[in-house]
Image (cartoon, rainbow, N blue to C red; front, side, top):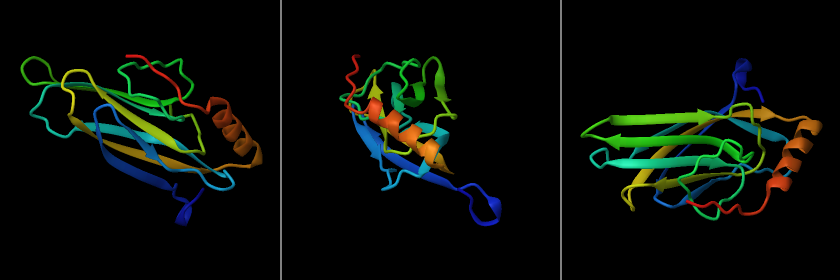
Length: 156
């Protein structure tokens, strides 16, 4: 989908998610002709004074629970971030992977799991490029979503 003077339409989302939670980014439309792809995914801890080891994932389907696991073979995984803050030894480590070729046209889900200090919160920021889907692309994106629908159970 093009904007004024040929610029690409970018939609931004940000949130503060608590440990073990899942946020829903509402993107679905009635006809499914608008697709999205993640172009930027950033995370930062709410309180940099605390030590933290966390996993933040973005999925195309709702998850039954947030998990520490990052599984690149999971075809519902859109992006993942591993975040570690340890002031005494390593400082800050942030590794983010985005599968930017994956186009989706339904809601997406952000999960956060802290491995060290339960109860801490994490900020996230997402930039999504809006893409106009033709009938064939729309059908493929919708069928992928239907195939992957249902709540996935992850273990920690």
